[in-house]
Length: 316
Length: 240
Image 1 (cartoon, one colour):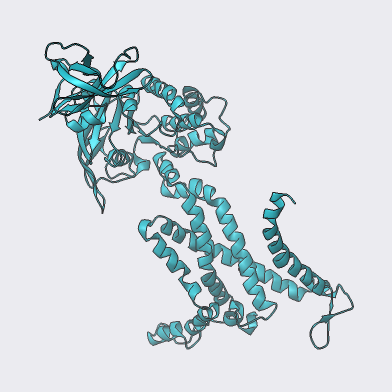
Image 2: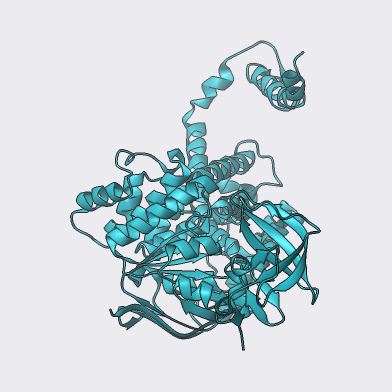
């Protein structure tokens, strides 16, 4: 499939710092792509350069084959769902959705509004002002407003962060289903690793303005390219320069082939599992994730740790 | 006495002492007769209210409203872009706000009087224009409607910028970005998004400005309470 969005050598230099440094990124049509990284890593600035709110210092932003790097937002076929939703407070849900369609002199505005509001299940709330909507409804209204324009790429800036945690799980599933149904390319910025892993077809991990790795959730989690990526997505044990996931670190009361003796120093009950902290001979402390049914391990116990060769992560 | 009433007491005292009492005194005076040597006295009369409908005063009143309206509109038009610029100027914002406030450090009278020196026949503007040969006769810049308007706008502008600034500062900038994102050009964003959201704040600023315009103008025009009066200084006796 052809790439709908391609960033080539994109950098953004602010007077005080280099926010984005030589970023390359390609999104095939219909992909759900997540940009993740710690705060200040440049993911939001990258998104804003695609939206047109920031102009790249260098590099090209190819949207449907055209370089839009220097175009203002209102001349780009992308649309953003803002973290704060940015619904116009003086306009009803219907007027908010109509806003973009009117600017683009669309036809059949009423039909399109009805269609997207049905898509996000806001039918019946057309005449409400944003202040009268719940958090989830505001999020869906913002989504509808952008979807109505059928943009080449829909940009989402931390779309779920303003929702309370219980709602977030449900909205996450709805968002994924919605993206599949409309088939529009989504580029989402998030700092929530779980959100990225569950929602995205592919993930780009950024750090200090640079791309660390781009890949499917499996690749990113199981074959992280750098220690930073390994550390950022999921927990990580370090034995020298070798990485090992807590769930790949096994524990046993009796020695097995290639096992390492260890002493349990701590045990944390997390509900569905238990995290055991155990110290090995080289003084490194490893986390072992066991099922909550495995409650027989107590602090002070002498145990043996082992893992499969293929679960070891090595970095250059 | 309930706690609620106790907490309301200071505000009530201020309102009664500084608003209700003076207004009542003014009301009482308005019903009295003017004495031969100044001052007010009995008998009570409605004559003062009859004079209100005298065409002479009616015209002054109308002119006051007109110029207050002009001042307000000009101040909003000039103040809005400046307030917007200050809102969007990042770290320099505090400095710019202090510059807006700077004129208040000098006397209102001095600032207004400075305009006399600039605008009069032998003032800076006319001297330069004549010296460069653009005009041969001094332009009548002073003692007219335009001069009064200029003075009022000049002295009112900081008072327009501050409330507009506080309104725009509260406006979530992502609204502006969202409008552009949805295809609105800057001018459309201004009229369809920024102005509607900022209207309550602008309305408050406009009311305050109009009231001030009337006050300053009326102090000068009706009460002849110079020297702190723009109209008296710049409008002269013909416009007082």
